[in-house]
Length: 128
Image 1 (cartoon, helix red, strand yellow):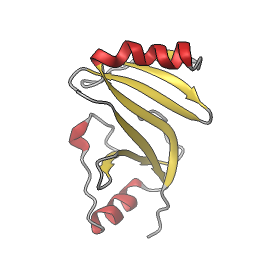
Image 2: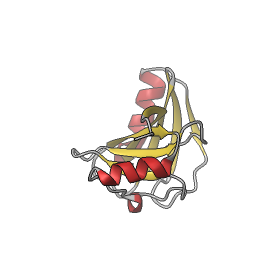
Image 3: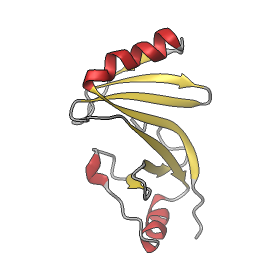
Image 4: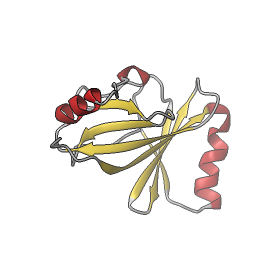
């Protein structure tokens, strides 16, 4: 395979609506990290805050229909199509139906159910 998978800078934490305000306060008031609300137009995410976390960005996403939090990670590759074919040849299918995503990206999961956003390296950032 020509593709090399690398960790991206984005980490999305999907947070149930009933725990969202306390979670924002935790990052902002207790950890005292820079927390800024960002506009979002997504059918499954009603609000999002960006948190600088060292060299990474945590996206705190409010999801109205979740009952527990999930952490989603970003993977970057030189060629998404080549990487997708490699993954499919190894029994890993895309699951783009879980959340709206641009056509040049894909969602995949590991066997434990961790969600990964697969996108082109040095592309537009924003796993949220």
